[in-house]
Amino acid sequence: MDIMVQKFGGTSVGSPERIQAVAERVLKTQAQGTQVVVVVSAMGDSTDDLIVLAKKLNPTPYGREYDALISTGENISAALLAMTIQAKGGQAISLTGPQAGVKTQDLHTKAKILTVDTTRIKQELQAGNIVIVTGFQGVNSRNDVTTIGRGGSDTSAVVLAAALKAPVCEIYTDVDGIYTTDPRAVKSASKLSEISYDEMLELASLGAKVLHPRSVECAKENNIILHVRSSFSLDEGTWVKENPTMESTRAVTGITLSEEEAMISVEGIPDQPGYAGQLFSELAKAAINVDMIIQSAQNHQTHSTNTITFTVQEEDLAQALQITETTAKTMGAQNVQSEKNLGKISIVGVGMISKPGIAAQMFKTLGDNRINLKLISTSEIKISCAIDRKDAKQALAILHTAFQLDKVTV
Ligand code: ASP
Ligand code: MG
Image 1 (cartoon, helix red, strand yellow):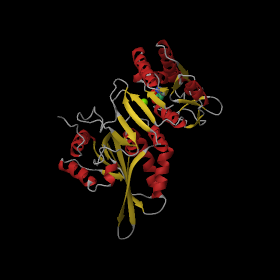
Image 2 (tube, helix red, strand yellow):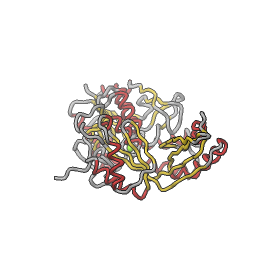
Image 3 (tube, rainbow, N blue to C red):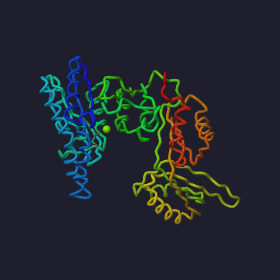
Image 4 (cartoon, rainbow, N blue to C red):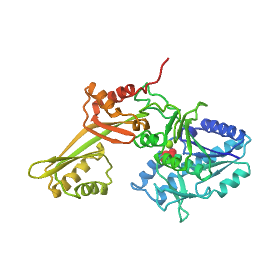
């Protein structure tokens, strides 16, 4: 018999009414003749509430007890959903991560899932149960509960789909799919019917918060099709898969904006091996996330030097600047400059691999609108530009139109 894995996020199980609706839906899936494994998140914002509570009693609570606490939200949703299904005459059982055989690394708060022993899940499915598994948690080699990182229930669901050889994993959420950009920022944003794993990975790591990036990686590795859809409607959502068949003529699939960027330039670095490594190692030691990096060479007659420019999140700027200044001195660099109030706009699409001129079109569109480009960086399927933050929203809207992503209104 086919197995279907359905994951329901926090909003989808956020109230007794919502849990009733989820129960109806999974019962319907089972009635269609498939075995059903359901993965649930904690109700609404309850994980956040638990974290606030923990920090009231211990300012740095991270570790074994923190995981013991913040994993409980999922236990509540799972038990509630199981008893709701039973109340409707169905057969269901809730399993915690440990009971479901989800084994993780010996790390707390961000453990990776290593294996799933599906014996128990399969027994319960055989017995006719809808099996409800808590997302976000597993067990380490010492039998302690671990959690796998905020937003990790998506990853739990995909890992289970892989372990159970389910071809599709449905991710039910409070939006009806993946959009060309954030619909709150651009009204004409349109829902994509399909998107490739690579594009989804770029969008997820650039800040489209619908899917946990690790879940997309895992789906790609195991060739599991994701169907991201709303738990509030029966409409189809967005299919995330290897080779989308439709819309393959488009060059750009989505656009993202991140508004909290700042940049640092180190000028006049002697052109010798090892300096870039030294600078970014120091920043990494302080856990500062560096994003765009550009090095350019100045070839003066007497000696050659480099300028290295990079971006960080604005909240990290002060610390990053201090580290950079200290390192620049030891390297004999001439000058360090920084700039705040930047935004980064990125266009993403596998279509740009085969279509020339996409970068030119992006730069020209921004230039025609008198938006100045501060930095440019590219990958095979992405082009990012750092621009003034005050121009960011306008840039998003005009690029969305220029690349024909606006909703077709009839
Ligand atoms: N409840 C967890 C969190 O809020 C996991 C999840 O929702 O995916 O991060
Ligand atoms: Mg989520």
